[in-house]
Amino acid sequence: MTPRAALPLLAASLFAASAAHAQNVFDYPQTDDAPATFHVVNEIPAGSFTKYEISADNGQLIVDRYVSMPVRYPANYGSITSSSGGDNDPLDALVITRDAIYPGAVIKARAIGVLRMIDDGEDDHKIIAVPASDVDPTYADIEEMDDLPKMDAERLNAFFSVYKNLPDGGNIQLDGFGNASDAREILTTAFDAYEKERGE
Image (cartoon, rainbow, N blue to C red):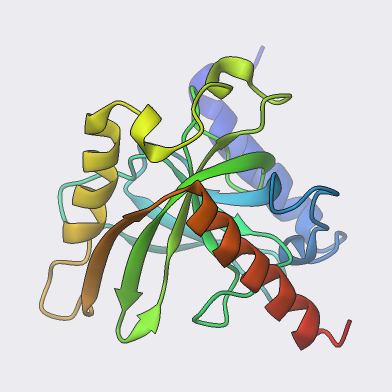
């Protein structure tokens, strides 16, 4: 039996080995009821201080950098598939789950809010989400940020306040949380932008 500690490495290896034979994961189709639910491809597991990124060119999982400040990602961090955000990259999402999600795995999620953020002058909002109820009914009653324990929201805000706090870390501006409706509006805009870019 594979030791539990080795499972993340095994998952990453299998993901990398199959990446060349799969479609670009960022083009993974959205759910039929998006933006009510939507697909997120995870890149960074909750609790990690290693910033993984999936290459849009070849699907390779890359160690981009280590978080310089003494903090860890407070939730799973990934990209919303078939979307284009204000920085022309896939829209970012933080998915709160009971267990960390391996890099490269796709999860169906539901928005409960958005952390409004500007990174070096560009919109870089973070959709805050929980698993869709058919994936994990634990979060069925969590519909808005206010339904979370207050400390969870404070951890999210605190992490993004400090994780780039070095002289060359860039300029991050946070503008509080929006609600689930705000998040769905951002999602709709990002899905429309993706389709427009592809000429659909």
